[in-house]
Length: 216
Ligand SMILES: [Zn+2]
Image 1: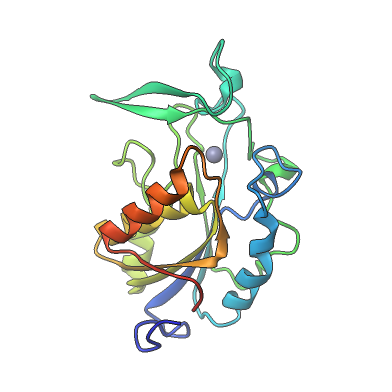
Image 2 (image 1 turned 120 degrees about the vertical axis):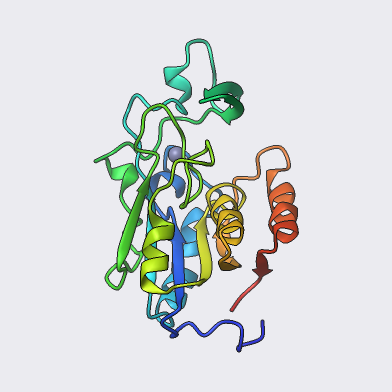
């Protein structure tokens, strides 16, 4: 439990960000996160408390650069150097997932989406991946979410969804960098945990100033 004065889910300046609760990240999906579907009931319970709900949706063209199939001789979960402008970043390669218009890209059927006010689609540019809901992986191409939040006077975020150590963590860290208040609810998240990535990202979130809690 956290200080209820810090988070008032019904407040106009607060939003729940539900990250990538899509079929491909759930069991039987192309990039299944262990127990990915178990986040759905706690997220639906959280959603009932919030006035503002925003969903993110990983949304790739089939020729996306992050798909191992599109990198000759490479396998999923290998990393490759990718040049973004004048910087080179390590990109993890993934099985093809969340391809635009496919069943895998749809939200989990049990996720309550009816009260969501905005869906942020990310990763739709073939040449760049996007873990964060705010910036693509070059850390400079904006998704537009920050402008939306600013226009609506929303400055406090509660994040949940998939996966803790990638899209949830990157989104939460970017939120804090942008001056927003960010809380991650671990009981409503599930992790990929690739080579220690969960512990590394939990530490990175805490260092960045993200509040990480088990439950609200
Ligand atoms: Zn993706």
